[in-house]
Image 1 (spheres, rainbow, N blue to C red):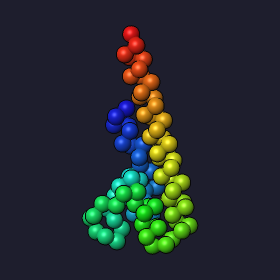
Image 2: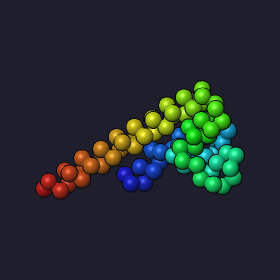
Image 3: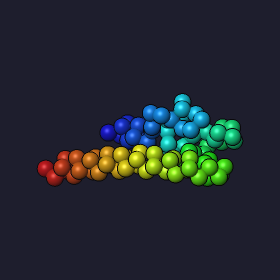
Image 4: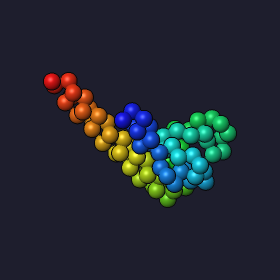
Length: 85
């Protein structure tokens, strides 16, 4: 489950203009070189004033975060069940 938790933060389509970067919470910046950008699709769209792209990226990031939250809840339930015995 721990390995799966990191995978939940990715999207098969990748980032705009960089489909090879799948992670939605951090990646090298599109126009800043190797410096890390947090929530890159949203952040870079806002910085470039591409509001439609920002709106679309927010939906994608929200989805991966919801998937992550569901996995964490499942893991917590399993840990609780395992310690209840």
